[in-house]
Amino acid sequence: MQIEILTKNDLNQFKTELLEELKVIISKAKPNATPQKEWLKSYEVRKLLNISPGTLQTMRVNGIISYSKVGGIFYHSYADICKLLEGKK
Image (cartoon, rainbow, N blue to C red; front, side):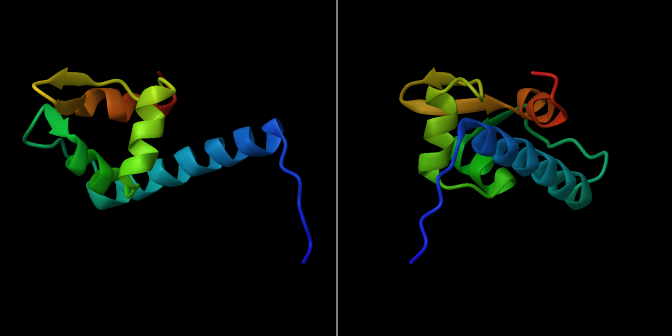
């Protein structure tokens, strides 16, 4: 079994490629369409980005994705997610 060592540059490149792929997937899924809701719950964000609960939590902890917490429920702005994918945030 061969072992590969990953560097920070490798992880940054992976992040960039992942965000580009997500941007393409989202634009193909609903071109120029805005959701009916301005704020999305965590399960809606996970479904939109096709990520696991742990990945979303990691993104919140690392400050990659912004959120508001009301009564134990995390809400995410659709506009902020779009900005994130467009590289403006």
